[in-house]
Length: 88
Image (cartoon, rainbow, N blue to C red; front, side, top):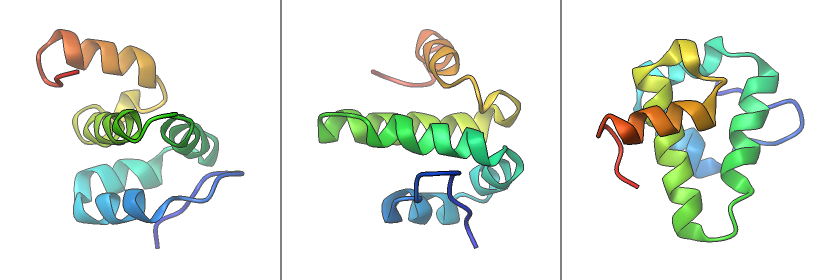
């Protein structure tokens, strides 16, 4: 089972991506329900599909690479882009 957030339901594509990535799934289960809710909200709040896909990918990669920093999404994204780990 892949848990969702406090308010937001986990979208099917994010659920599938988490199941496919054991490291990210482990980190996902380890963060608080409120942090999962913020993750889902940040991804779903995108106005364009390209932005939504980018946010989902960067968040999942962030969970895999830096699970301890999972709650600081925007700061983590900036670090990953700056280090060349993620392309914007």
